[in-house]
Image 1 (spheres, helix red, strand yellow):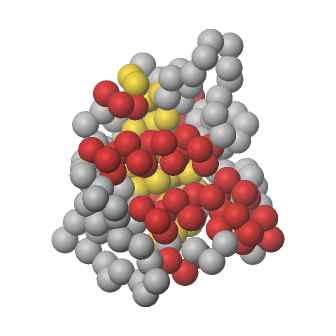
Image 2 (cartoon, helix red, strand yellow):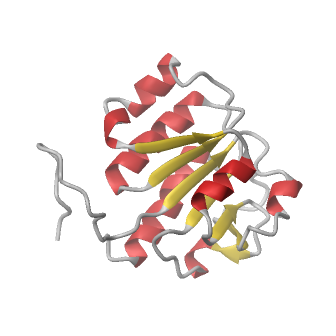
Amino acid sequence: MVEVFRILFYEPRIAGNTGAAIRLAAVTGAELHLVEPLGFDLEESKLRRAGLDYHDLAVMTVHADLDAAFEALGPARVYAFTAGGEQLYTDVAYVPGDVLMFGPEPTGLPAEVLDDSRVTARVRLPMLPGRRSMNLANTASVAVFEAWRQQGFALPDQPIEPGSHEPLG
């Protein structure tokens, strides 16, 4: 069985970004984990619209707090994505099962989360100087596709849905 990557959104605030992450999980086979409190209702129209019809194709779990999320996901390597990360995201040798953690909009991960002993490393995407951050869903997409690329875009052991597209190449 091919293990998948896990996306962890810590206290997300914007429904549209989480909706886009649902689509990301559905099209890559990654799991999406959300840590409460959420800044929106899971039935919110912006979340449903951004996720389109992918909600039933994605694996999504909501956790009451970060400890509950780590308990469910562990043991695993956890990469905290932050603009102040010491390591470029492309310098990590990802393995299936890794957790790619992202903070809430607009503040990012708080210091107590970044300093948590369960965080393996702080990583960053390069940006032009003077820019605060990238969009949460875009950052998660870049990271998940890099991790998946490193695995040769291996497919998780799951049936391909009728009408879905197989990878090119």
